[in-house]
Length: 495
Ligand SMILES: C[S@@+](CC[C@H](N)C(=O)[O-])C[C@H]1O[C@@H](n2cnc3c(N)ncnc32)[C@H](O)[C@@H]1O
Image (cartoon, rainbow, N blue to C red; front, top):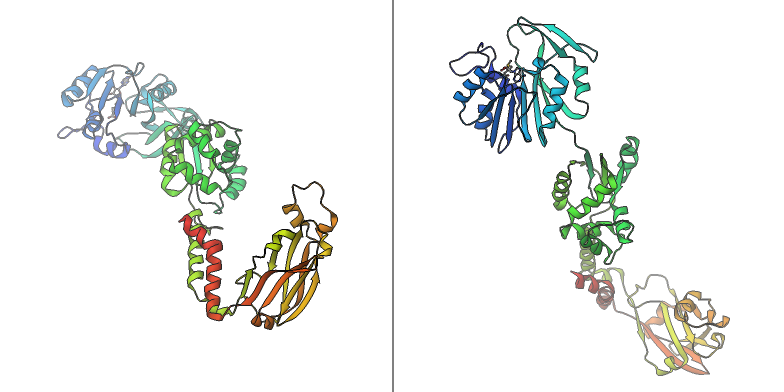
């Protein structure tokens, strides 16, 4: 046997170090490695050096194997043809400068792929014949004549795998063909993950690019909806979390699901919807949980491809929007808005027992307490009153300002009030629909001395509210208190 591999002080026909560099082998840490046609074990030694957990080299040459075992006592060498491969799966398999010796090269490649672990890599180092066709070409070499595949033939053989020509290998003296290094892996379906926040254009990308490419899309929002109304199944934990207080604010639903550590449960549902091959996930996943989603897809045999892009978002993030709104309210409370814009209305309801006696309800819609009194001199007083036993038309309203009393009717149709307040009443007299009032004969200047507003029922005046004006300075305080009591307090409680 002529010396093939090169070691320090021993120069073989092959420049083994240059070949090792060209092979671009993956990391061997903790892996199981098989070298097919290992010769004197140069690459087996390297795998061990790089931390492989187990290294096996096979070669049909007894002499080569005995030399290999002498050089690399840490590795296992077998005098064995590649017709029969050692048991078990390997993370990395190497077939270097040997494929052309196989009687059935195509069958050998498939056999090697069958011995590869799910995430394993087959490294082929081989000559490729120049031809535009998919064919085997017989090539005369100095020592013999062998069949080599064209690039098209290689593509045909590898069509069911993921593969890549990594680059050139080292040429040997007298080589009639160019040698290449090819990495082959099991083909796994990709899942394209569009996880950006709402409003960043995920759905548009699905409707355009992915729809055209006929890649099925799984919508996260739709999945949440279907889970909420029981149209699809999921783990108990995921189902009950989504069904509890479901609202179609999907970014908040997402936060809830992922913060409870249910990424795996959701990915399982998505995989069922996406099918066996590649698909797209169109669903917001907060950045800090994206790795969980990728890991869950990886564990299910997918290659997760996360797509990120820069785009002006059409809306702010869910938490951000809430926090910013609360902060804005606080600045309104603290600011001098009231002072800047002027005076405000002061509306005080009068607690008169006769009101309850004659009316099932009443309301002053306009003006409201704290409302800014603007430049316009005139303002309107409007609202409604629902008399208990009387015809609404028999009831009047009055305003009194500086001793002058003005009377007006309840004559505005207020179906909204009747619908809301009298919804349990079977028959509502038509006249009660006219329970609204609107009176525009009041001036801003009337507010200074104060205005009394009330109803007249059965000839009796029933005061209902006092209207006045706040001072500019207290206007700020009134406005602030009003805002706080309506919204700010709620927001503060939530924080
Ligand atoms: C050109 S050498 C390549 C050695 C090594 N792979 C390298 O690149 O340095 C080819 C090797 O394949 C081995 N070989 C040829 N036919 C084989 C077979 N059917 N089964 C196992 N090994 C074989 C030879 O004995 C020889 O060691």
